[in-house]
Amino acid sequence: MASNLLVPPGYKEAVPAGYFPIQFETVNGYALLRAIAASASQEDQVKAIDLVKQIRLYTLAQASNPPEQTYMDMSGKLLDGVVAFDDSFYQRLARMVNEEPVMTHRNTDGSVDIYFGPKAPAGHEENWVPTKASATWFTMFRFYGPDKAVFDKSWKLADIESVK
Image (tube, rainbow, N blue to C red; front, side, top):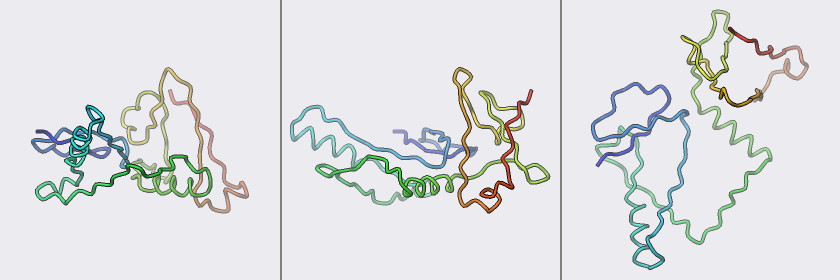
């Protein structure tokens, strides 16, 4: 039986035998697992829950001795799934953005060129932001902990330039 192996962006290592690799585009991910019972009978409900309890999530380094899995039963518990658009939203967003590794190539002067388009330009893949050729898109920049120059407008973000 093969196990799924979640691998981060840029993972180039060999995948061990018995694993099916799933390439993530970011280092963050989440999953909500739900087993659907064959019927509403108590027996089928127990079988479905037992199936969920068989799932193991651990690092590849722990594969030879996986830790005990934690199972949280959410039955009958209230979950507020509404996104809070207050300061806590931006704090969570900033935490997630800060966890992502920055994989960019810097120019000799310290600046960074970022390429937008449906296809990465050769040699600039790490500085490429994919867009869909069949859809419109726009850019938006958010500054976390900006310096005074952003507020007094002595620093200005350069316009996007078309590269042929």
